[in-house]
Length: 220
Image (tube, rainbow, N blue to C red):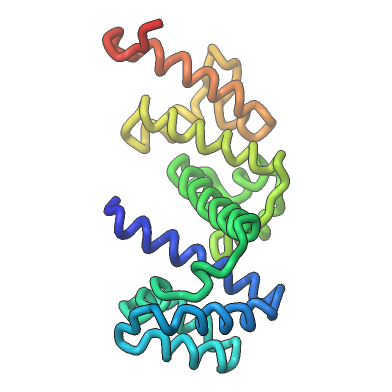
């Protein structure tokens, strides 16, 4: 993916989290006004973006999201010249980016589940959350998560990536996941559903090593 697009996506995700924090901590608007006042004398004002920010921060909070999160050049200009970009302390900024990372990771997990053709009921059972909660993740990925839940997401993502490397065609991945496996002693999907994701992942890792060209293996 183009590095510019990756940067744009991260900036967008950053501001999604920031807007959620504004709802939790309304004083962030006052802090943003102060940051904008410090920015204005020394910051370029392309297309009047500083003035636009001033109007937004002085207007209703409900107007922030539609302007800031829009997928067009005007929204991109606002995000690139945002007073929120340099607003936070190091600790606060790290906390914001942790939330951003979790949102992105949850989205990757859902994409992995789709790739493996796992139903919402199956995914919810694997992760240990309610089906309706998992459905909300597609619209609004979680910003906090128990470590045990995060580990289960990592397991599914690891299985999907290993299986995709071994079986490039999706129908083959689906067939393998739901077929009987004599070595594992069960269908891989059943192991995933009953806490055996590590067993499936380790099995795939062994097969990946066995299929690798000796010239590709690390030298110790």
